[in-house]
Length: 476
Image (cartoon, helix red, strand yellow):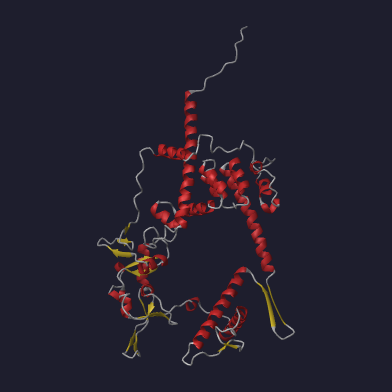
C-alpha cells in the first residue's frame, strides 16, 4: 500500500480574485472615511465662521442647496462635525481610516471628553452594529437618569413665605427650570418697565422728579440714593403681582397677546428712503424695510391725517391676502421658494409691493419663510417673476441664486487622487486599517453598559472598554 504525503489543493483563481476585490473595497472605504474626516473639518470651520449665512437658514440648509445632501443627512453631518471639535481622539481615528463614519456618528451622540477614550476602544473593538447597540443602551440609561432627575425636581418644587421680626415678608421659592425661567423673564420685564417709567419721569418737562415704585418707595433714578439691583428686583416682583391682580390671571388669547401694531407712512412703504414715520405702537423706531416686510401679509387700517396731524378718516381694516388666494399660492408653491429652503410654513410676499402698485394676485405672490422674507426685504436679496412664470433670485451683489448649482468638476480618476491626498498627509491605509478587533463573540449589551457608563462604574476607568465591547455571555 502506498501512502502519499499531505495534499494541498491550490486556491481557486476565482477566490483569489474575490479576495483581492474585497481588500480593495475595505481599503477604499477606509480612504473615504479619512476623506470624510477632512470634510467634517471643513464643515465645522465653515459653520463656525458663518459661511452659510448668505440667505440660508443654517449650515445644513446650505449643504442641501450646494452639495445636494438630504436635510436629515446634512443636519447629521453638521452635528458630527461640531461634536468632533471637542473629541480629538475620535476625530484622529476617523482621519486615519481606523473608525468608519457610521461608528463615529453613533459615538458622538454620547461622547464627552471625559469618556472619549473608553468609547474609542468600543469603536475599535466592535462592529458598527455593536456600537449602535451600545449607544442605544447608553442612551436608555441616560434617559432613565434624566426622567428620575425631572421627577425629583418636580416633587421638590415649593414656595415658602413668612414674616420676619421686622415685618418684612420673606419669600423662598424652588421652581422647575421652565417655571423659573418664566418668573425670571417676568421680573426682568417688570424691572425694565420701572426703569423706563423712572427715565420718563426724570426727563419730563418739569425736570428731575421723584419716582414712585410699587411699594411707594420714592427715589431719584440714577442717583446714589437710587435702588440697588436687589431692591429693583423686589419692586419688579411687586409690580408683577399687582399687574396680575389688576388684569386677571388669564393671559388672554394668543392672537391678542402677540399682536404687534406698526404705524408707517404710505410714502415710507413705497420708498424706504422717503421721510416719514415707521414706528411700533409704543413709538420705538423700526426700519422702513421691516415695515414693508410686515405689511406684505398683515391686517392694515388706512388713516388719513390733515396738515396738523389730526385724523380725518379711518378706513375699514383689510387683509392684504384673502384666505382663498392664500390657499391657492400655498398649494402652488408648496413651501418657501427661496433656493435651497422649501420650509412648509411661510408668509405671503408681494413680489412687487402693493405700496408700489403691485396687485394682490396669484402671479404677484409667492411664499417665503420668515427668515427669507426678512432676507428679501431687509438684507438686499431680490426676487422677480420671469415671463415664463419662474422666480429669479439674486444676492445683494446681483449674482444669481440658482435652484440647484452645478457640482464642481470631478477628476478622471478620483480614487487615485484620494489615495494620493491621504498619502501626502501621512495617512497609511490598507485593507486591514478599519477592520474591528471583534472575533465573533456574542455581545452582552447590559454588561457592556455596566462597565462603561459613568453612572454604573463610578468612573472606574481600570475596566477595559474594548473587552466590554466584545463581552461574552451565555445569552445574547
